Image (tube, rainbow over all chains, first blue to last red; front, side, top):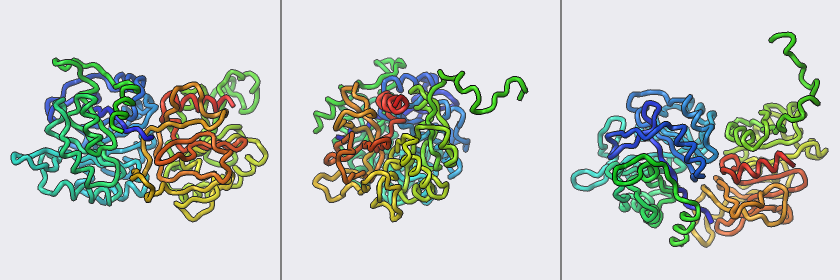
Amino acid sequence: MLRHRIIPALLLLNGGLVKTTRFKAPKYVGDPINAIRIFNDKEVDELMILDINASKINAEPDYRLIERIAGECFMPLAYGGGIKSISQARQLFALGIEKICIQSAAIDDPLFITELSKEFGSQSIIVSIDIKRNWRDNPKIYHASSRKSLKRDWLSLLSQLVKAGAGEVLINSVDKDGTLSGPDLKLVRLASEAITVPLIAVGGISSLDDIKYCISAGASAVAAGAFFVFHGPHRAVLITYPKYQDLENLFHELA
Amino acid sequence: MSQTGYTAPGIHCHEFKDLPIQIGIIDLGIGNIKSIERMIIKSGGASLIINSPIQLSRVSKVILPGVGHFDTGMKKLRQLGFDTTLCELIEESRICLLGICLGMQLLCNQSEEGVLPGLGLVNAKVVRFNSDQLSDIKVPHMGWNVVKPTRTNVLIPQSFEANRFYFVHSFKVVPEDSSVIIGETDYAGNFCSAFQQDNIFGVQFHPEKSHRYGSALIQRFIEL
């Protein structure tokens, strides 16, 4: 049967790989090409590269770096960060990217998702939404490029974006980001009930059990950053990925 | 270009016997050509991007990739004149053809996704993954799944414990004659994930995105 996908999500900042904690304090974890070679050797299911600065400073995607990254990937590769136009998307696909991840532009204009999915097929369009809980513990959409929480209802935005043509939805818990403290399973459950397309859960993953819980809560795929790049209590940089057999056993427990 | 360094194409070919075998990749503008190119090179071959049917005479092995809508794919094939040329070359056994994903579906007679007839090279139809089946499966079928060879064949690698490949598709191929099936995959029931009819091959998954499993398959295609 179809395997749930386990996806390393790597953050780009000024050409280097970083890992944030609650979207802050980016810590340098290494050279992207080197890291991606290791992930390729470990035969990861899929890889996601997100440029966390491109939208903020209104910059173009770093095409040269992305092309080099794509050249190392013999698995599906998704890129996100600073994509605002069809022509940018076309350029990215031509470099050998399979999927693009849209956040700011999707929140600002859901019709952009419709245009993209018509042009490239919805299977290649991931919509990514960051969720931050407010002081009342209510989930709110976090607009990362302006660093503000939005008033709009997050679940209706999700269904609106799926209707607009998103092929997958990525839900990122800002409060859990980089904390290795376990996922926000309530968010995962609510999101998976609200949409019909595959859900990628990210934020807080610290163990294979966390991955299992996310899948039980309805996620089709689970992405993680810190879990795959840090090791031990002092967060030493060490790139890891579960063995195929360990993941097989994990999914066997679920069945 | 210096006069001395110039060699006309096609001359002195015998001097380059060690050159990797060139695989043609038909570029319809609707697939990830770059990934296929990279996988061919990684697997020991060389690639030639083919934009017009006339270039097909330069290769003996051809990959027809593609993602997207069935009718869009057929329209592109017709516009560029590949439909008749491909059928002729196959008829004359002059090429070995491998369809990937939508490329596999385009080799069939027809698809529930569109109204245009397919190339009809393989007697099969393309149907949607049933939403009214017993289990509530998500469509598209997206992710890694196992391909079980249904018989010994020249394409699907036999050396791995599990032949796992990356899939993204909402429609599946149903051959009229099940003897063309060389690989099956389970997604709410077994479906045909690879077929072969003489010199025509089709795979529903993406070998170019399937690590060493895909590389082994491409290598076998190169070495056919």
